[in-house]
Amino acid sequence: MPKIEAETATGTQVTEAPEGKKLVLAIEDAGIDILHRCGGNARCTTCRVEVLDGDPGEMGELERNRLAMEADLADHIRLSCQIHVKDDLKVKVINQASVREMDAGPRPLD
Image (cartoon, rainbow, N blue to C red; front, side, top):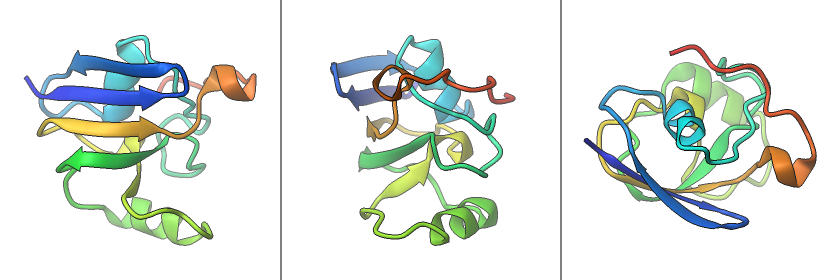
């Protein structure tokens, strides 16, 4: 199973995820704090991560169009709701519910 290493404001956690699982669900199911306000529909960018290492796969049209609407995003920013795990990944979680004092949002669909 692919290994996911997620950096957060409180440290780094490592988990495994079955191939094909949405990255946002792998992160959340491991108990790692991540926002996903639109429920995994590539509409809000709250689930964005910075890919530090590994291959997150090709970016789809929905994700590319949504990220193009944002200004000043660092290189390697992706929406975790649009990445299907296929390889080991090291990511930095950008938005955490606890840091923003918000509800994480509706659980994204599998």
